[in-house]
Amino acid sequence: MHTYHTPLDLVRERSPERPVALARPGAVAVAARWFQDNFKGDVFYAVKANPSPWVIETLADNGVASFDVASVPEIELVARHAPGARMAFMHPVKSRAAIAQAYFDQGVKTFALDTHEELAKILEATGGADDLSLIVRLAVSAEGAAYSLSGKFGCEPHEAPALLLAARRATQDRMGVSFHVGSQCMRPTAFQAAMAQASRAIVRAGVMVDVVDVGGGFPSVYPGMVPPQMADYADSIHRGFADMMVHEDTELWCEPGRALVAEASSVLVKVELKKGDALYLNDGSYGSLFDAAHAKWPFPVKLMRGGAGEANEVEGPLKPFRFYGPTCDSLDHMPGPFWLPEDVREGDYVEIGMLGAYGIAMNTRFNGFGDAETVAVEDAPMASMFGLAGRSIRLPREREEEDRKVVRLSRPKGSAGKKRRRR
Image 1 (cartoon, helix red, strand yellow):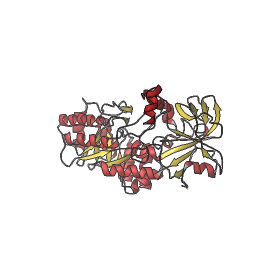
Image 2 (cartoon, helix red, strand yellow):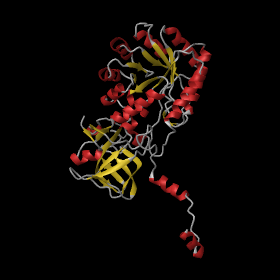
Image 3 (cartoon, one colour):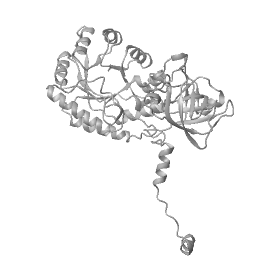
Image 4 (tube, one colour):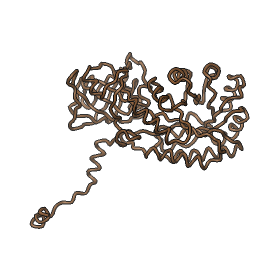
């Protein structure tokens, strides 16, 4: 992977025709060390957030030795790029073939479930193995999250005691609970509330658990979304864990995805056409901009202009734009607003920031588009929860509203004003 000091250096060296994923391995390393130093438990990286080999390798090099995997290809990916790493198959619904392959071929022994049927499937596919770590996923409230993940998975509270008891009886190794408070959780106390709910289920079941897995949901910074300090999330989890009805040896796990990699990549795209306030790009919702289209997140942007040897970052009065991707599907639309200099033109390059999570991972090949290259850059991300950049990205309209709230005191007129100015 070729390394440039900044994205602008890439544009100056050559004028890429394809979208370019700009990797920042240093940002992954900083985030990985923060979790190692501040989370009092085991950190499992949620591979789905960004399965790029350089991400897996950088995490492994910086102390993350456990991975949350959801499929056999993810298991094989981790086995190749982080040999010897511990893996947990945390997808609550798996095929029998996938379970057997994970257990017998790759040595995966930790499996999530949220139904009696899935428990039976795991036991049958592993030949009745008694060395399994069985993690029961509970449904919890997702208030405060940008994406609620409570609809598809999770055992409901009235069903939890029986399932917990069945999982406890099914293994001679470890049994635990997990949950997910929702992606991009903006309320640290949501973890504490979910842990209290899990604790009640454990008490009703009359079992002791060996693992409490608080899942993911740890946030990053996006325009209009400034989460609390990351330390507040760790503190809330540690307080919640201390209050749970578990024994002293119970392990605490988490599954960060977005928080570890969101800052670690951006995407460089080319403007193919400007039509009023619409910019047509060579990447879109079938590529790296899924969240920009479907969640309508207005990711931060920078504009660069020029070709080899003479490219520069463009500044000037800003205007809100919307984006269209390169496919012929009208759904390939990112409403934004994306604030760029008003004189943006065909041939310009736009860096779209904070796309390390669920960016390149969402790429398809629809209409023949989506083939992106990857290069490394050494500059800072556009925002950071870990001190690499500012912790907020304000939209221009937010700045204007803030300026209007400032009370400006006028100077006294006449002789009184002259006396004050002389002072």
